[in-house]
Length: 367
Image 1 (cartoon, rainbow, N blue to C red):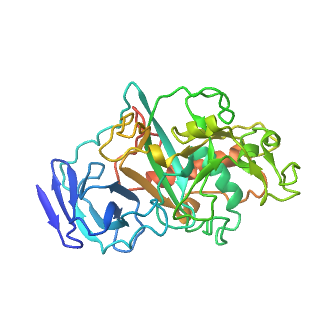
Image 2: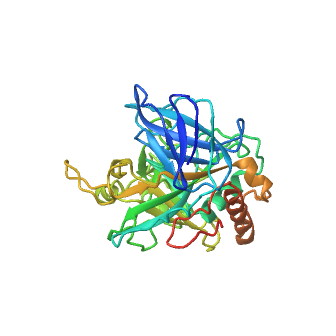
Image 3: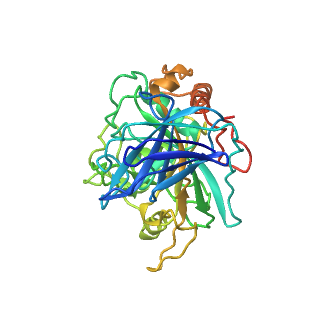
């Protein structure tokens, strides 16, 4: 056993049986915690572990390496895990892994659940903003979208962040297997509910999800004219502006989308049938707590249907640029460029000094 400890919020770390045990004193007025690991005292974190408890076990480290550990505390009773709900990370504690590293425990789904690897670009913040009432996507789909928004990496986007400093987080989600009939956004895939557009309510501290908007319907090649109209009843479009465009969904669709992860296919180029992957919506009401198993029934009659694994990997936009991300796209995207930029994300995530990432029964392509 190789103990290393220092006190910041009572933050301590101890190496035991091939894993790092990190603990701290519960903080008044805090209900959730984020443990950050970095390669030195000033570097950006490359991985986070989140929990409602006062300790985590990190079993994905490399042998005989120093890690700089800090803690971020979440304000109790705030409505999300997004911007405006966290304190600043505490000063970093140096923790050293031992030589007796054991292979990380693989993530497995049950017979009635499945694993889903998703990436999210944080919006209106450069910190990790998590998944509740947020959208995410497969790496290829998000890389295609980022390709259209990164032509000037130092300029702020519609989400009030620059691509250069943007935070991209890779999650492993366990979700309940379901059969949702009569969806309109999923391309006929009944394993998901209809996709909802999230964090478009001008309050990133309390993001909401709503019936998917006109632009998301266009990207998914779902005919927007059936459900989206301006106040005068005319069709929505770029020419008429989208600020007053309203899309409507059936109550049944909204009810299912607030229970189960929603999905839409991503085509990106409105004039092409090139398929780039999927985008997802993650309803806050049915996210499982730390102590809940996916599918657990609650006292109020609801069921938790999806859960983030505690560990998530992080890269910044500048790291992706260094890994070969191509910023030459403007209004159109090609499959070759999208793949090049997805590969830049994979390469960047794989640079973390950690054991290989996995969100399947087999080792991920990040190896």
